[in-house]
Length: 224
Image (tube, rainbow, N blue to C red; front, side, top):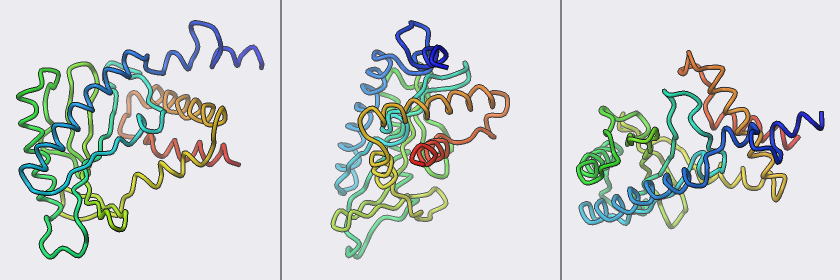
């Protein structure tokens, strides 16, 4: 069993963790792209609509569990939350569909100045817009209202509804689940399961367990 463990995470050049984990250069490219998009949206949305705008990286990149695409049809998936800040005491506030429209329109404009962007998905998804890039990855941009006084978030859906959703809370839960080398091991276990799911459900991607589901299941099992 000790010998087999070296095939997962050891000093050999070909280990499972190396085969499914992005290289430093790949991570830096992804970081460069999401930083550029986030800065553009913060500036333009704030100027055009008068609300303080903040962004927050979330999902697999934030958790440290991002994996490489396992097939030519897969893509790196980066999630950047867009937060419109106002207090709940304000009289007139945007609706969920207004926020989604503002972000979608600005993404379309961003495509015209970014040569790395292939397309903006139309129509957008119920819970996010998507920017598809040329180098096998995309950035999803869920849109939130943030009440800074209460540190409370809610997700703007395309169906013009608010959804109680707080990515900060689940990230803090994940961070507190393990620390140090234990957290490193937990992240590796999540990556292994995500790689398995990508390969096992290659012909039925709609049935593939979501990354967040696998992350929660692995973390709960690890804690016990």
